[in-house]
Length: 176
Image (cartoon, rainbow, N blue to C red; front, side, top):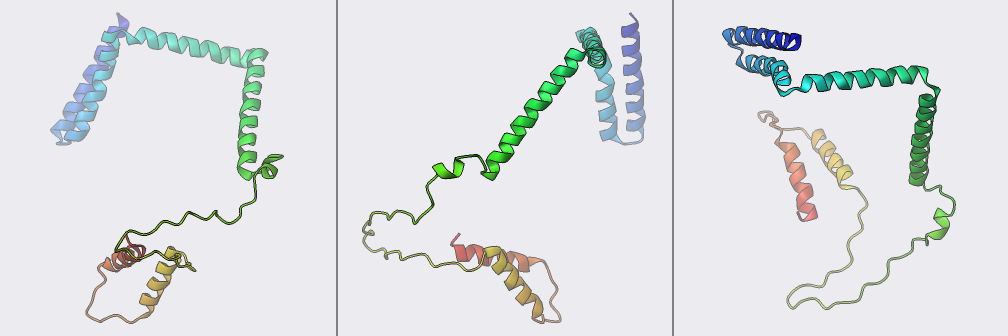
């Protein structure tokens, strides 16, 4: 009976605050307050308050055992050791320092030659790809630095489209 009274009182208080917020023309805030105001009454009517109490009691019992029971501390230590071992094996695996890991892998050599396939009629034969000496980002930065050093026109304002022109140029070079 006390739970019902508290739930109804909380819901009424929330609806009152929502009404005040709506009166001040803050409708978004009023809607949030109204939604929160409905929660206690909804929890009571669905019967979830006894469930919450049971969960709270069980958590309190667990916390009491955590402080006083050495068996629980042993379990916590075992969980910590397990997590530490898993993290250590993941770290060592990423570094490639696992014993025998590098010996079992063959050394990287030249890629095997692909079988030659005749190009379709009317298409030019593709030659070897040109070697790139610069990364596209470094090239774009160099181009941008070169443009920054050039004097601009006095009447022209920077609209921010220069960066898009650089991006378009990079995409055009890559054929995208």
